[in-house]
Image (cartoon, rainbow, N blue to C red; front, side, top):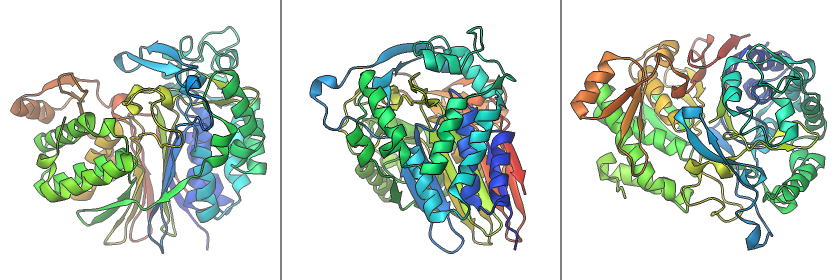
Length: 508
C-alpha cells in the first residue's frame, strides 16, 4: 500500500523535501526531518543545524514521545576564568530593538542533529541519507532566498554577521551587501557537510570530524564547547504532557521546556472557564506569563519547577500561582496515522561559523530571555530554557494532528489561540490559524502590555480589563507562524500554514 503524507513547512522547498522523502519509502518522521533539514539550509540567519530541537511523535499504535534535543550549557573541564569570555555585545533593531550577545562564547552545545538522528533511528522508515539529500541538493544547486530570512539579514548582516569573515561571505552578495529576497544562494561547504552527515550519521557532529572542528573553533574563539561536552551530549526521550481539550487528547513538550507547560496551563484554564472570549484569553495569558516572568524564568531547576507549576495549577487554579527568534517548525502526518512535529531554534545566531563547514552556530547562551540567572551561570550539562512546544494530538473520533510554531515567547500564545479555536470551537484549522491574535507582553519591572492584531473584540477586552495595548499590522510576523498537518478519521490528509510567515503546505 502506498503511503501518503501532509506537510506544513517553512516554504515550498522544505515541503517538497518532505513529500520526496515519503515517495522514497519514508513516513511522516522522514518527511519532517527532510523538511527541517532543508529549512535549516534555506533560512540562513533564522535557523541552522547547530541549534536545539524538540521532536514530538505519536505513532499510530503506541504512546506519544518527545525527543529533547535542546541546547545545553557547555564547559566541562574548563577553568573558572574561561567562563564569561568570547562574548560580543550586539544591539539589533529586530523586534523594536534588543541587545544580545554573539561570538563563540554565546554558543550553547547544539542538540538538534542528535535529536533528528534518534527520531529517524527509532521511528523513520526510509534511509537517513535520503532524508538529508534534499538539504544537500538545496545548498549545492542553490535556492532562492525567502522574504523572512531576507528581512532578518537586512537588520543583522553588518552587526551580528559582520565580525566573522566566513559567516559574512555566506550572507552577502559579491559586493558585500546583504542578500535580498529572491537572490540565488549557493553554499558548497554546507552541501559537503550535509553529505558527510548523510554518510557518517548525526554522531559525526559530536564525536567525528565535524565535532572536532567545532571544539577546535570554540577553543580558538574563546567559547566553552569542549570535546568532552560533545561526547557527553545525548538526546533525552521524555513523556509528553497530556491534556484533554474538548474531544482532543493533546501531547506537548514537557519540562524542562518552558513552552509546553505554559501552553498546557493556558489551555487547561480556558477549558475550566468554558470560554475563549478575548477577555478570558488575555487574562489567562497575563496570569500565566506573569508567573513565568517572576518565577519560572529564574528557575535553577526547570524540570522540577515545571512539574511544580502543573501541580499548583491542579490544586488551586491559576489564581493560586505565586508571583515574585528565531525558530522553524515542521508538521507532518501520514496516511498510517503517524504524526510528527519538530521545532528547532538557533536563537538569533552567534555570527560564528565552524570553518570550512558552512555551519553557523547558535547564540543561545547570549539570549538574555533564556539566561535570566546570568550569562554562563548554569552548570555545564544543564539544558537551557525553551519556548518550543511541538505538539501532536488525537481526536476521539479518529482525527490526527501535528502542530507547532516558531516565534520565541509568542509560540505558546499563538498555539493557545489556534488550538482553542480548532479543538474547542471546531473552527477549521486554516481559519483558526489565520484569525487575529493577541500576546500579553510581561517583562519584569515594566508595565504589562498587550500586543495585538487589528480586531474590535480585542480592543473591547482591553478596555474591560484596563490594559494597555499596541496594535500591529494585520497578520504580523511578530505573532508566530503556526503550521499544522492532519489526517481525518476517514483518511483525508490536509495541511494549513500561517499567512504571517512564508509557510507552505503539501499533500502527496
